[in-house]
Structures are given as C-alpha cells and as structure tokens.
Image (tube, rainbow, N blue to C red; front, side):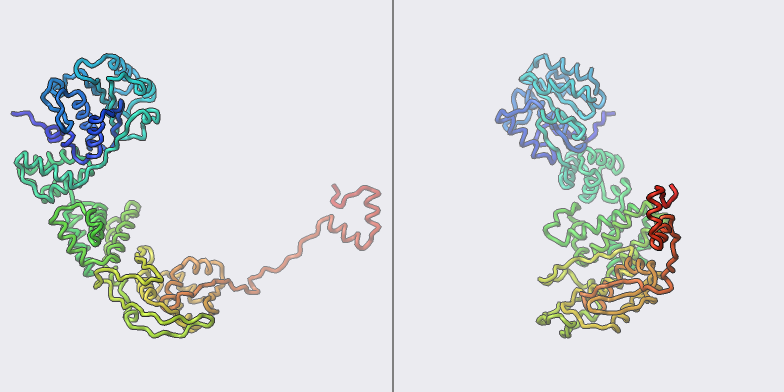
Length: 565
C-alpha cells in the first residue's frame, strides 16, 4: 500500500508565487532580496494556517539557493535546495518553541550561531511559535538577536504577537499575515481537484472555504475528509451532511414565508430543522447570516461582501429584490436579540419561535395607515406659531411593495425604524410613527383630543399597571405641554417609565411639539400633622430668662450651665 500524504503537505508551496493570499509579504521579501536590503531578523505573525512557516522556509531556501530563478524563487535543483528538501541541511535550523522553550534550548541555539555556514552565504534559524518562549529564554536570546554575526538570519513565527516582549519586537522586521479570503481558498481547492482528477461542485468548495475561517491548512484538512467521504466526486449535499451544516434552502424558504406573513410555515421549517438534530441557536445564527447576505445584495457596492458561489449569488439577488431594507434590518435586529438572550432562556425553542413569529409580522406592523397616503390640506397652527408655506407631502405605500426606500426630505434625514422586541405595543407605535414621518405641519389640538388619545393608548396598552394609572390620571393642556396629575409617587414613576405615550400622542394628534409634564397632587389629608418637639434644658432656661433677666446674672455668679454638665 502506497504511503498517503495529506494535501496540506503534498501541495505545500515551494515558491513565493505558490503562496495563496499573501502577495504583500511575498513581494516585499522579493524586493528586499533583489535590492540587498535584507534584515537580520524577521517576525511573521498572523492566524494559524495562513502560510507563516511556509514563507519562512521559502525565504530560507532562496537565500542559500545557488541558482535562484528570475522571479527570486529557489531553483529546487541545486545542492542546497536538495539538502533542505531532504531535511539534511546544516545551514537552516528549525526550532519549535512550543516544546523547546527553556533557557537551555536557546543557549544551545546561540552556540550554533557561532559556527559559520558550511555551504551558502547565510545560516538561517527558523523559530516557530516563538511566543511560547519563557521570559528567561527571551532575555537570553535578546543580545544575540540584537547583534548577530553577518551570516546569521533569524525568522520568527507566531500566532500571538501580543505575548512577545517589546524588546524582541523592536529588533525584528514584522510582517502581518492576513486571513485568506473565501474565493482564494475555493480557487486553490479547485486547482487541487484538477490535479487529483476530482470533480467538485463550486458551492461545495465555497462551503469548505467558509468553514475554514481564513485558514488554508484547515480548508485542506476538510477537503481530505470530504474526499474520503465522497470519493472522486464532491457534492454540495455531501459537504453539508458531513460537516453538519444547515442547507441554504431552509433559509430561503424561511424568508419566503416571512415575506408572505406565513408564520405557520416558518414554525414547521424550524421543527424540521430540529428533528434533523440541529440546535435552534445554530438555526437562528444561520438565518441572521442569510439576512445579512440579502442586505448586502441590495447595494452594488457591498455585493462583493457576499462570499458564495455564482448559483447561490443569483438566488440571493432574486430574493433580495423582493425584500425591503426596512424588513431586513428589523428581522436582523430580532435575530440578534434572540441570539443574545438565547443562553438565558429556559425554553429555548419557544424563545426562537417567538423571534420568528415577530419577524413574520414585521410588514404588517410597519404598514402605513391609509390616512398617510391621502394628500392633507394645511391646517391652522397653534397660537403663537408662525405659519409655514405649504409643502408637498410624499405619498407612502406599504413596505411590502417598496423595492428601494424613497429619498428623504431635505429638512429631516430618514432614519430606519427598528422594532423593539421587548415593547409589547411596538406594532401600534410603528404604525403611528410612520404616519408622523409623513407630516410637515403641526395640527392644532385641544384638551378633548388629548384626552381621547390618552384613553386610546390606555385601551391598547398591554401593561395592566400602566393602564390603571392612565385611567386615574387627571389631564390638563397648556400648549405644548400635556399636564398629567397623579395621586402618588408610584404612579408618577410608572408614567415616566412608559416613554411610548408621547410618541403615540404626537403621531395620533399629528403634532410633534407635544411635551408631557407629570405632577403629583398634594392633598391635605396626605400632609402629616406637625407635632410639637419637647424643649431642651437650655431652651427652658432661655424662656425663663426672658421672663426674669436676673437669672442670667445668677448664672454668671454661680458659673452654672443650663444642661447641668
């Protein structure tokens, strides 16, 4: 049986041009070699599996290569390159600091620095996971790193740069390796498929690339696992089954049901997902990512943020065309709140179902009242206000029919309204606030209109304590203040915490200048009777002295104090 070599080793880059997604590092190193501006110490830092050690080995090979190519890559045919490939080079020393992190290991390495290279110009030391060195090892290494011999070059690699002491960082030329993008990983996997005669669906490779989270080595490990599972044909269905990933179709179906306000279909889809063994938090996170992808599809400038295959990109574009930005932003907010409070929920399934039901009725809550569609005539202003010239009022249509939001009026920038899941009457407020945005004039009102709006809010309020307090409140109106008089301080605090009252009144009465002033009624029976305080000895003496001043003279003669002390 032939010896199997994993893809991460078999297709490890041997030239700078083969390194995926790190062109900024490769080009800088090539220019440094070409111009002779080569530092004596390099620090390669970045996430795992992005090519730090690979670039360090390529740099070490090309520095000692006897016949480098025109692109400054190692020839791989000279004695130095062959010795390195066979792990028999005495001029390139590799040290794993994760297991060799003591002072003794560093001192042994420093001893090797004293010997000149046997072949080639440089003696190169590659220290991987250098952040694992102890404090004493760093201090022992410091002097050699600062003033090495001219033939010694140190290449340090780490995933945690913040753990390296500043004195080491200041002596190195630092290169930051970035996470590899999904399209670049998918293209590299497609190249390997062609080399290995493997057929793979583009969507399957994109899923593998997304699962790798920017690490090419992780992507290659997942790829080998899928080859073992599927053989020479990798399909999208095999990948999502093997990697325990939810199918995109679920989320497309969910959004279709949400757009048609079909809450029962959404709950059935969630039930199907749970029966297949997926956790509900995985479902809500996947839905949030799907909503985010739909949102970025609505702007050509952000379309590049969509990291999916061409077939899925077309489906996203079609569904994004049917969804309004207000719906997507509100649904995304609900999904985010559901994820935040998921761990503390006792009934996790019900918690997710409630979030989905709220999403299903977003458009109904945000639908504009028919009154806002009618062209309103200018009405008289309240006393003391100057009349403004009549302005044309935009005609609004239901959110479900809007493909793109209308341009905002110059005087007031449009702000997307996001529903608050904790407010039980948010749908009522959003409808009124939508009407309010279409108004440009303040309507003249009086106390009867204030009382009617106050009672309407109380009737629709789901909080029984607020409703009772509002029913017992005495109202008065002195434009623009609505004066609410209550009996107790508790009632006052209850009204102050219900911030939605004035939003509702301003929208219903079509006047944005209304203010609320809450006061507590002072009743005579509430005032405690004044109780006379008993007099002290000193106060009794002063009272007696007022009636008989001779007591003061007696006090001075006998040196007496009224408190007997």
